[in-house]
Image 1: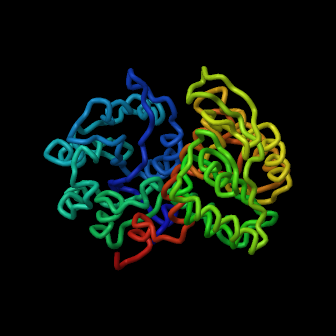
Image 2 (image 1 turned 90 degrees about the vertical axis):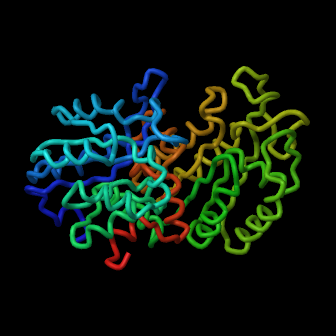
Image 3 (image 1 turned 180 degrees about the vertical axis):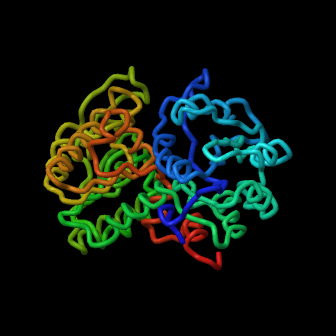
Length: 399
C-alpha cells in the first residue's frame, strides 16, 4: 500500500511530513504560500476519511536550537483559515506536550508540531528521534518532495517504524509522475532550459539530458562559463574558472549527440551588481572589462522564445538572470511567457522548483504551465538518476 488513495484513514492519526518551508517577512507574515496550498488535498483526504492530522515540517536553517524567526507557530493562523478549524500547536515536535496533544487528538482535528530542525537529531537522521516522532501517529504519510533527497529522521528513517502503514501524499505522487514524464518517452521537440548561477550545480542533469533533449538553452550566471569556454570575453561576469574545461566538453558532447545547445548571443550588462547600476546591451562574447552580464539580451530572448514555442516538452530549471532585480528580470519573464504560450498550444511544461518556481509565481503564471515542482534539489537529483531516500523509504519494505 503505497499511495494515499489506497488507504482509509478513518479513526487513524496520520503523521504527515509536509514541506512548509515557506518564506516569511520581517513581521513573520507568509510571503509565498505555494507549499502550504500544495499540501491541502492530502490533508483534506485524511480528514474526509475521518482521520486526524499531525503535521511535521522544517522551516529555514536554524543553527542552534529554537529561533523565533523559524518557528512554525507563525503558520498556525494561515492553516486555521485554510481548514476552517482551530489548528493546534505543539511547542516542540517531541516531548510530553507533543505526546499529550497527539494522544488527545480527535478525528477531524489538526495538530502542527514545532520545527523539526530545532533538534540536530533531525538532520542527522537519528533513529531514536525518529522513533519518538513515530509514537505520535498510527500511519506515516510523506508529502514533502522538497526534502525527499535528504535522509533525515522525519523524511526517511521514521518510515521503518511504520512497515505496513506508510504512504505517499498527493504532492509526492504528482512530483514523481511529472518527473517521470520528462524522463521517459517525452514528446518531441524536447527543450530543456537551464539557468541559475553555477554550472557546478547542474553538471549531472545537463549530462543526463544530452541523451534526451533536442534543445538545451543555457542562461543565468552559468552561461558566462560557457561563453568563456567558447572563447568569449566576459568582462567581470560570474565565471567558474575551474569548470571552463567541463563547459568545453559539454559543448562538444552536444555537437556529437546532435543537441542544439544554445548560449545567449547577447546580454544585458551592468557596471555593478545593482538594480541602480548603469545598464547596456552587449554581445555575450564581447563584454567590456569591468562590466558584467546580469540577464540574457533581447536577441537571445527572441531566439530562445522561438525554440520554446515550437517545443512539445519543456523542462525549465533556473532563471535567465538576476530576476529579483527588476532591470534584470526581463529575460526570465520572456522565457516564462514563451513557456506559457507553448503550454497553451499543447506542450507539456515542467517548472523545476527553486528560483524557476519563484519566478513563475512572481509573474502569475503558476496555473498556466503544466506543473510547478515544489522541490528544486530533489527534482534535480531524481532526474540525475539518484535514489531519493524519502521515496525509497515508502516504496521499499527493506529500507
